[in-house]
Image (cartoon, rainbow, N blue to C red; front, side):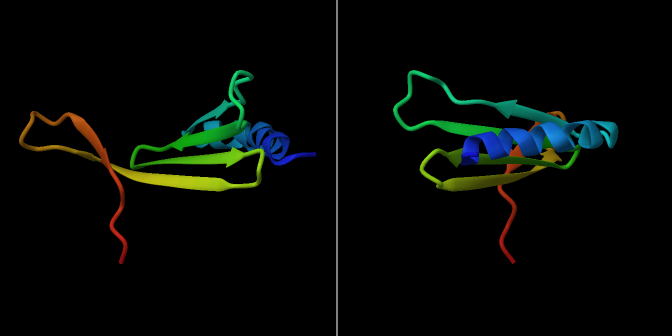
Length: 85
């Protein structure tokens, strides 16, 4: 099983549990027209968004954002990368 199929299998396994706990979880599979195939899983809570992208070459990237409400612009939601401490 390649890395893209493993990511989809993981998503399919944990999605019902995460959705039941109030998370949003989405899987995006490879796009056939692209030479370098990738798949990703997005997980969103009320305070964070995480996206894991895996390529068929074995490379991976994890993006993590904190969600906060702006005060100066009427409270619209914004996302920012968390600070590294």
